Image (tube, rainbow, N blue to C red; front, side, top):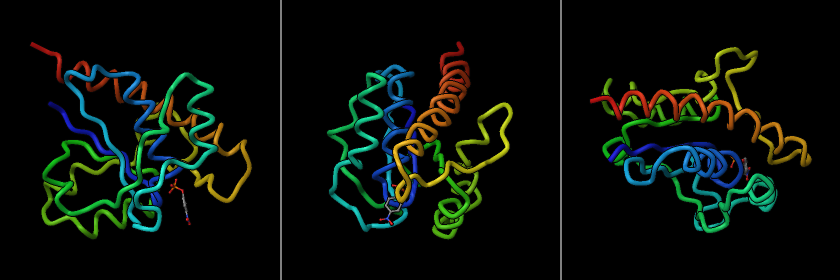
Length: 156
Ligand code: 4NP
């Protein structure tokens, strides 16, 4: 099993969407996908209703996810850790114990072929259009991640 973790600040807006989108692109039998927040502020809560709505609109159900905080042992569990922005990157890197831990962490938008920004903007304080932007960015990034991981892990 290949374990993948999506990380943002609250684990209620961006990373639940990233989890749902990537799950929709990879087979469950081989890929285990979760998400977490660098903060514990929303622990136990379902995703933000605006994330649930945009995912539903695209045919993805993320309503049963519950927020949890990233913990150091996640470095042992997960093979790939995708963070949404530089602040998440810094927070997780601080918790890393080894170079091997650090090598697992990637900005998710580094998976885009061309991009002006390497960060998924935090949509929490904005309006619905921010959630559409978040979805679009994550959808393309997850397409590329799924392609790369399928090639890498289905090679004989
Ligand atoms: P997320 O968005 O990191 O994409 O889940 C946020 C959710 C909550 C807060 C900030 C960002 N907050 O400040 O409570």
